[in-house]
Each structure stands twice: as C-alpha cells, then as structure tokens.
Image 1 (cartoon, rainbow, N blue to C red):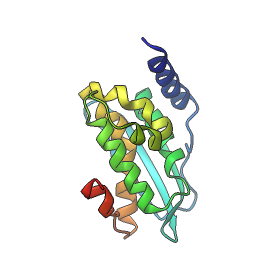
Image 2: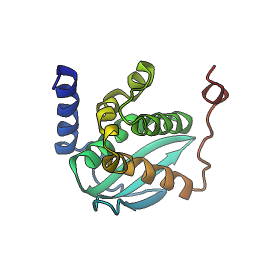
Image 3: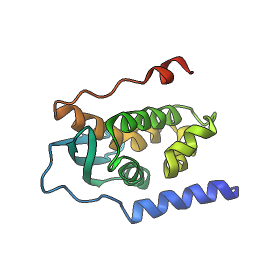
Image 4: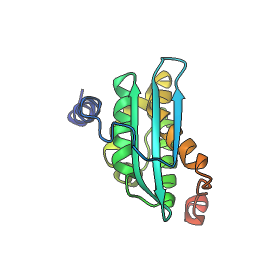
Length: 160
C-alpha cells in the first residue's frame, strides 16, 4: 500500500469514528431514510434549507465504515453550501464512485476534499452503494422540501 492509499484509508477510518454532523436536527425541513439492501447500511438524514443554501444537515446511521465515513465527509462538504454547489459535488462524487478505479481528473479530487479518499472504493462495485448512501438521502431530502435539484451548469454539460 502506497503512502497516498494509507492516507486515504486513515481519512475514512477517522471519519467513521468521529462522525461529523451526526445527530438529527431538532427542526428540519425534510427527512429521508435510505437503506442499502445489499449490506444493511442505513441512514436517516435531516436537512434545513434557507435562501438556496443547505443551512444544516444532520444524520443518524448504522453500517460499514465506508457508508458512515462518506456521510460524515458529505456533511463537511455541503453544510452551508448553496444548492448548485451541493448538486455539483454530488455529481462529482457519483462520477468518482462509478470510475471503477480508472481515475478521475485531479480537479475533481481537489473539489471533493476528503471525499477523494473514496476513489479507491470505486474499484469495488459492492461498496459503491455504501459510499453513495448519504448522497442519495441528501438529494431525496432536498427534493422533499419542494426544492428542485439543480441541473448541471452549462459548463458542466459541455465540458467547457
């Protein structure tokens, strides 16, 4: 295992032990409960939106270290972010998780910050759903508020 793989493994372990954003919000605009039927991971995610931003996100979950760490990292990325940024990050994380270990652009990894630690997980199809569980819950919760999930910006769809 090279130094970068060890660092990424440590990021995942740290986030799975010290879960950022863990705990349901007392007041939330929406809640989404998601289960990964292949392994039993589950999350109940609550979200509060205001002025086009994720003002708060909280969650309670149970499952493997990958699912729990991914939700913790997601919390750090989206808490306080505007919805267009959140949607872009969700698409980037999804792209990385479906890369099957073939790599993604460095700019994408930089944008995902600690989320880049999950790039190696994309090599294991049975773990991809674990890493995407929290993102699925977040997207569902945002839509439950009656807010449309932002479409990609023109520069994202044209590659410009």
